[in-house]
Image: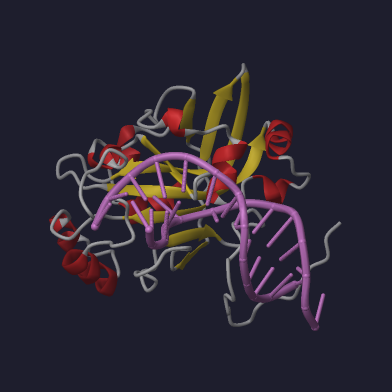
Length: 231
DNA sequence: CGTTGGATTGGCT
DNA sequence: GCCAATCCAACGC
């Protein structure tokens, strides 16, 4: 079963959280390749475009106040509509794919209530290969399943997602989401690789998954776990 | 194992 | 011109 439009017609933080455990499928060259989503990040929009957040009693008060007052400066939609981000200003449930660092593509799904449109999206940061893993490993030229889609650009590349999918409907078509099983243990942390909004905790991770992206720098986690030997 | 710098396009000021 | 929601090879220890 594909995830319905209504799934994406909710705020980015809610969708990002709920997307963990869901399946991203791509029917390509007559075969199915699929990943179970294990890491996501939510991106909101500029202040003033999200008045309904005031009614979000379930959102942490500090985060809610911050988004209402200052918006989300780390979002690609923060400075208004442009050629690149226009899909974020459209209806939820469509893919927003962009190029970064001149060579990597990253995939997002547009989210947010349809009645009160806001330019939100959820970045797909990592996945666990569940179908066609051999195809994905070959495409990425890696030998370990945990290296296939453990990062936003890796995920896009492994699954054959490019800017050609920009604006495509995520609820139908060759590239789409299927139900899967939601994850109940989730870690919430600051987003990775951004500057200026490091205090906003909008990254969602399936706790304990070995398929998540690697923290870039000295991520001092108290009680850091011991190193494990590979096989 | 941790850290660093280079790659390389295109969006935006 | 500047530099990004990244990745990985190359180092140093």
